[in-house]
Length: 581
Image (cartoon, one colour):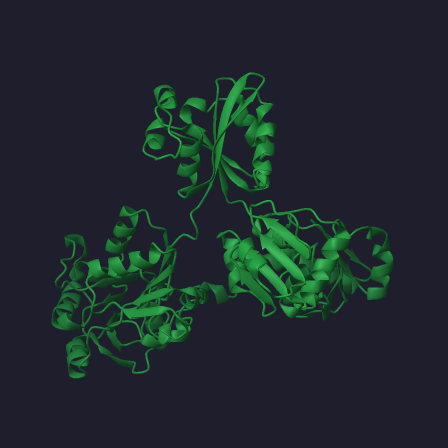
């Protein structure tokens, strides 16, 4: 929670404003002092004990002009909270933490932010490492994992940092580094320079055991994992067979590893996995050829780091194995390019384009300029001359190499984006994919027409549809039936059948004088927009030789300036105004 302290009425008013905007913040332990900095320092002096336990303290002058993190700026989150408060007051956050001002990683908060464990260091050693880093001394970064945090570090690597994929490559380097930053599940000893190690949760532990094996085995098993060269804090899942799901040993392991998820697999699932040390005896009892190895592999879909190990404690036998994903997984991101203007792709979509190893874009519909942000060495290919099977083959080739593939579709890919067949293919082969939405051309049409497509008390519905061309329309979605709603209608992919479109719209009840707009290549450099009435729609499209990339908009909302939103009605109190009273 956030505690406020003030010394005058102006400060109290400012405190109410800040508190109201921030709301309940149970995730923050902070003090906001509103008044002079000197008074703040004297009042808060008794709170200063240790930077790892001090609360965040922010001082704000009573006008809200300056917002100053006084205590625990970086570790305690005062810097970030100061930025939030400055946005509320319209003031300036005065940040003095060097790493924040230089845009460098916060080494003392990195583990918490990325969900990692940091190998313990003395405060003096940690401070020395941070000073070396922020002073931009030669630094080696070894990333022996491929999780999101490691990917982020790859993308944001400062100029004074040299990246290595494993400790062996770092050790073979002749560069005289002054700091080593290591992200690895391995136990690493003998590093002679200043170093920080973060332990990512990327390992999968498979366990088999004798019936009712004692809980005390858990600590011995985890000690053996450490002795074999891996941090137990790197274990993200504990895995076994359904036959063993109620074993006390599994419950104790889960208690010892609160960060790890307990997963149980059926004998049928595990029997399909090839293991390096199969046992006929185990198969007779369990239905699979090795519980520890098969369950670790099932969880990781990768490779074994530690093959089956056998142990015994107090006469009870157990086995364990350790696995990790086999290198960096491939990924396919289906990105909505927006209506055409390269500036209208989302920030997230552009980041994917900048990182992609393969950009496969719909060349007939997406401007090539959208791909100009591709990184050096990326493959950029138009799909215009590729059939569906060829597109699949190309994407899978890159995916199987652990590469990032961006499939770039016009507008929003979920609206007439033809991604259904692609997703079916990805699902069939168990490929990892996701969709980044884009700005649809119907939204660009509203913006370019300077029209609000929903008019109070006249039209509160927008229909997105198309005319019936080569692909049949469902009977209940025929244009003449949709036209009965008299809504704002945005018609995709229908310039070639404009005569039929006009006829059905008139048949459905739109008046001949209803406003229409034919929008060609919205937001492209050669955009053209033609306004008119529904009775002239065919002439608008045919006369101007408009083709496939034309959006037809029909409805009274076009250019409408009538109707008053309740938001600005003097008799209407909206939520924000109500909250201020």
